Amino acid sequence: MQETMCEAEISLSPGSRLDLLANPKRNFLQHRDRPSVYWLDKADVTSTCSLTERQNELARHKTVNKMYKEDRPSPIWPVKQSTLQAIPSPRLKKLAEAKSVSPDWVEDRPVYSTVSEAAKRASASPRTAQLAKAKKDHAVHFISNQLKRPQEDSISEKVTAPTARTEALAVPKMEHPQHQHDLTVLRNVPASALHTQASDRVCQLAKPKTRKAIFEGYDPYRISLAAKHAEASPRIIELCTPPAHKQRHKKI
Image (cartoon, rainbow, N blue to C red; front, side):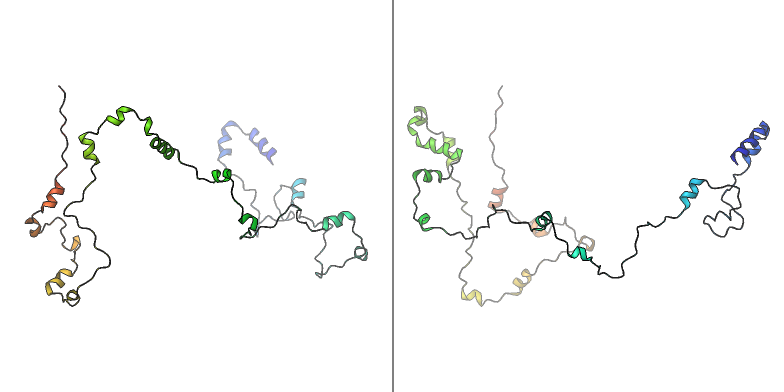
């Protein structure tokens, strides 16, 4: 078919080349009265195209193997009499033996080991006692050596006296006179306090303060009148005072 088309193209004039290209492509899979979308048998094909020998070979269905046998009717397979009377070889007997435990295998020791009476009465040698001592840290060992040899200190270190600033820094920090220590956990409560009844004002102050949300009218930047007229105690003024720093004079 391709040869005939090529011959027709050659025979055409250059002017009719456009008419040939304008023709739609031919649908080679379209057949008359095709009942299915699947490929029809060779006898029903009305087109002139024919399959090659390779295509016919590939179109053949896969044949069953000649050695194939259907499933046995019973799960109990018959065993031949010769198989029942067979004698295994020494090699088969050796392979059929179960794997034995290694002779070097040792059973795990119990959690609580038993100590002999001789080990209980044994006394450690001086070398064992020396090795049993904990290893000292290098820094601690260096400081202890420095403390053990006061005779090697220089004369200037013995004569030198600390300055006033060093003595001031060496003074331990004292507690503030208004400092109050924590109360003991267990303390005696007087009988009068046990039978005391809270007043209406105390009950009013004991209620938690209700806060409104911002969308309900709460203003977080509002300052109460009592806070505006409050006076700071001497302790608060002392804590608010910044520490005094030394003034460094610039050298001219």
